[in-house]
Length: 235
Picture 1 (cartoon, rainbow, N blue to C red):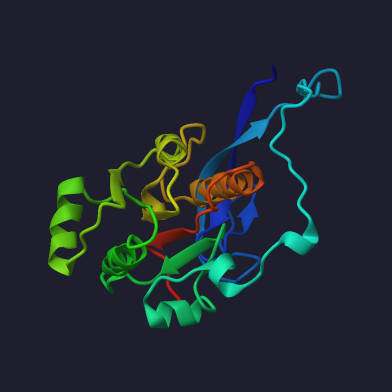
Picture 2: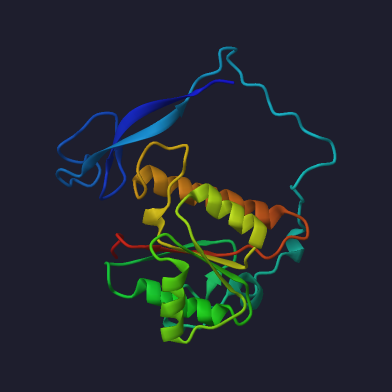
């Protein structure tokens, strides 16, 4: 099995443009002094020239074709209404099932409070898993009490390791997953720190794959929208 090699790249903190060497000015967005060093894994090439395909077991697959005619696009079946009118309006009538929703803004404007208020509304009809990388379960409980959020369908997890978060998602199978915030999560296989462009991309890709599997698995629960609170993103 070929080992992964590590390489150094430079990433623009403004637009995400990458370069193999440091540049004073980003060639994509034109910002000055925004190129930061990052370390990413580069898969080694197989010596044989072609990697062997993984063995496929007959009769064991999660790929189930669907009749196009049977796929519902009605609002009540394809979206989850958050119960907060302005947010639902921005989302076009609610969060689309199986989607990734980024809630961004400057620190201190109330994104975490909004996330808990969403939990209070959605937990009336759905199972919610709230993952926090910044607060302990006790802190979340105190804030929820102040907001009047009380529900048996709301589960909280204080964790920053992406692998552990995905394991909890597999075990709990929530209808909605909320992460606060994406800047605190990290993946063990990457050398870059939490909050870097590489880590954020890894989280988004892992969740995209996970949601795709949920949609394709027979008899699975409805795929959950993921609402991510990004402390450093600004509109």
